[in-house]
Amino acid sequence: MSAQLIDGVLLSQQLRAEIKQRAAVLSAKGKQPGLAVILVGEDPASHVYVRNKVKACADVGFHSTLEKYDADLTEAALLERIASLNADPAIHGILVQMPLPKHINPNKVIEAISTTKDVDGYSVLSAGELMTGLPGFRPCTPYGCMKLIESTGYDLRGKHAVVIGRSNTVGKPMALLLLQANASVTICHSATPDLAYHTRQADVVVAAVGRRNTLTADMVKPGAIVIDVGMNRDDDGKLCGDVDTAGVREVASHITPVPGGVGPMTITMLLMNTVEAAERG
Figure 1 (tube, helix red, strand yellow):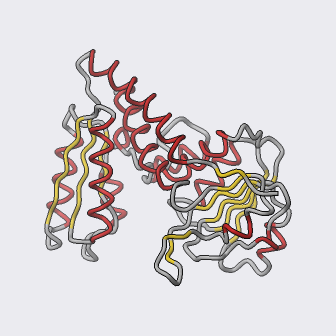
Figure 2: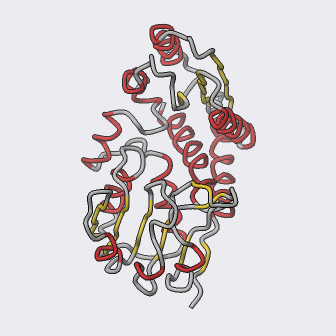
């Protein structure tokens, strides 16, 4: 058996075509979707991420702004700028790129963003809406993972899903989204004594811990779907995930590659949240 690769690039292109159509309908009515991106400091990876986000906005017909600030920007000044963007009717989504300089409290910044413009889905209210099943903005990476699983035609109802990782941005919301799809969910993490015991029982495994080779072939149930959220480097410096893809591919039925799996979907779901914000507003 060799697992079918779940092509995140192709699915992303399909979804972006849909987003572009929705944006065109809004623009024709005089409401072009708008995303404001704020970058504080000189983190090299962050510069790449925001450049990709701004380009993605242009590709689907959004209006976007990129505001870059030096690392010594005060927390008060950043909060003041967010307040201005909250009041700007041309902006439907606000994204402050993480990480922020240490003197700025990221939680305070996230909570300063209007809940109607929280397209990252990171606020306490967005988390609460997800927890209680209310409509709201879903964090982009787990939202993208659900679309990848959905693209296989797999019915999650009654299936056992294991999420490896408990972060607020991926692990926890991933588990809640799987629950909403009627899966039975187990969350594993660094304090789980026998990870393989849980993963061998799983119909779906989502690996999101940021450590390569966390999931190996002997830990996977034959025919399982494996979603690899990890972004790591191997000994040769090549991009890899949390999953030993070569080995697991011989056991699983479907698997996401790294790169080309979850990564392209994260920005796509940011665009999806932004167009939805514009449609609601």
